[in-house]
Length: 473
Image (cartoon, rainbow, N blue to C red; front, top):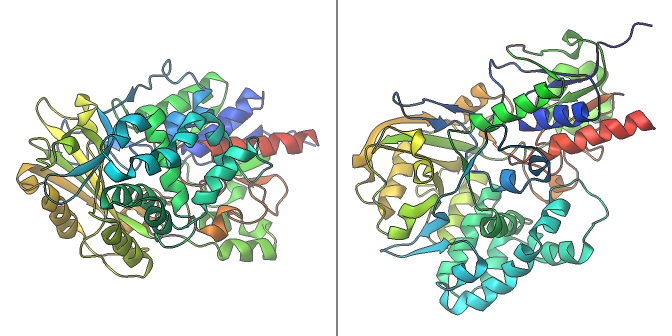
């Protein structure tokens, strides 16, 4: 019998595909990665989207999960050219007038401005930040017997609740409630459903301990670093190679696919059992994203001065306003006043724009696959808190859900999280098999597997461990 050409082949050179390949190469396996784009990275990519000299992160940009990731922390990222660029403040959340609530480093620093909710905020976040590495080890993992059961139980007691319920039960004031709502809205879930509080707790905790950094010089630096690490360990990367069928791949003992269930059905359907295909077909995707990138003549003129120091700004007002906007996206409606997640990379990294100029981006959640142009609504919402913002815009680049999916097929309908992270798909993601499929030697390693969305590489890492365990059995 002819020996396989490789021990493992990986389809897709996003962060999870590269993490899987690196993990297998570290274990001494021969690995090849096939990527349809001419560049590695998937959503971890930067381009000149507007004007010459202005560098924009095409999809992912702010990396609390990357800075905290156990897999990324195991790599010599700095030696590979990755420099985390930290803004003066991780996060600001403007309210009407000149007010803003901020996360400013430690829990102690942050609560100084929370008035009646000082004690409640400290009680919620301090236990999690005190043992953040242990928390991350358990949360960024597939379902398992917890290594730190009491800590995970403390986290889970609130995390499995709706974010709006946690905000209202924990906090009395509108400022702390709005802050938590903005954090939880990163889940892309309605704030009145479980477990929308989980992302708010995790991201809020990480803001205090690792920050919400950018990659200096653009997101592509992180993807290039992962590729360099793989090549150093003997792996191969073949770009510009579209995989329409597994039969087009070289022979391998294992195949790992950094794709979502929809793509897996398309390329591996005949190898999958009918029951497994049916389970994949039932997998649910979440709302899409409408994203704008701006080249700016000046910093955004926020009324609240603290917002001018923040890498990320949550633009949406109160808890009730944010909850209404997020519910609209799930209900198939367009919010007139969307919740806008906005980033200001040049607050931390002046290399992104010509001297004295700036870049920013903002996105809002919209119905899955929406074709509605949200430019006017997004910019109007920013103007509400930063009058004169439109006057700073030199150029803009808009990407609707369909544009995002054409640029990266894993962003199905504009869903940047690899599928809905509701209670039904947190533990069985995408099915009870986790990384394994019904076909021997075929695995999933995308953000559609545990622990889910975000740039952390842990989906690929754990999928690779599953491959290695199967090889030893």
